Length: 265
Image (tube, rainbow, N blue to C red; front, side, top):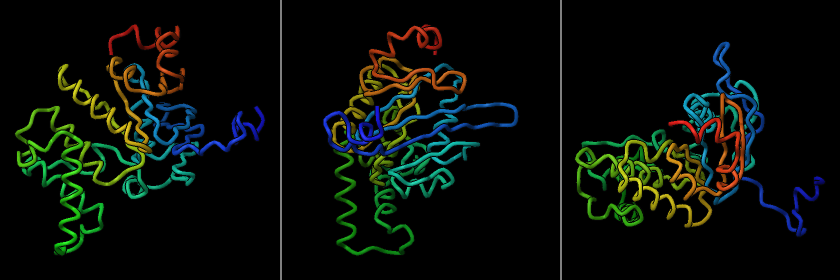
């Protein structure tokens, strides 16, 4: 394919630039190469799953995307901007969100108050001693929207520490959404959940995916979740990108089956 075809596509229309572009990223810890020369591109509104056996480099790769670790080599661009050396908290302000990274869930506060704190931070009120009535109303409107979206309205006044594990993870995602990210990174969102909790979390992620331009990247061990949700799947093995494609193609890939799908997660 020529450069013109790559830029404009077969129909002659210019293809939108990916929201996230990773070029030949590697991460070394001394003699250990945790991530080796990984490249990928994620489009706006895409739901991408990152899978692989234990020790494949998935968490390290997420840490590179979110700014916890700088890559040893390679480049990461978000919305066309080079963020390779930008810190984690600055990436959050740019529109990249990671559930456990962005805000801390406060178990001693109510669900509503957790979301209110996030909404006030997003609105730029975090360092203000007080906000006026109109600002409080706008914050509460945002909180109410997210409570409804996440199915938490009936539990708005419950303390987060009293909730079941699955509900706490939903609060974590809803709190991340208060910052209005354009890219959401979910690290094993269904870990430790039973079937009913997994179903509820999958339903929430699907709702977020269908809302529009929010791109979602998730690490997930439950292949039922991956194959029901993902547009694209990237498979890491021993720090390298082993395969990439639609879920059906990944499920049929012999190399993937040998490396991951045939083993216990």
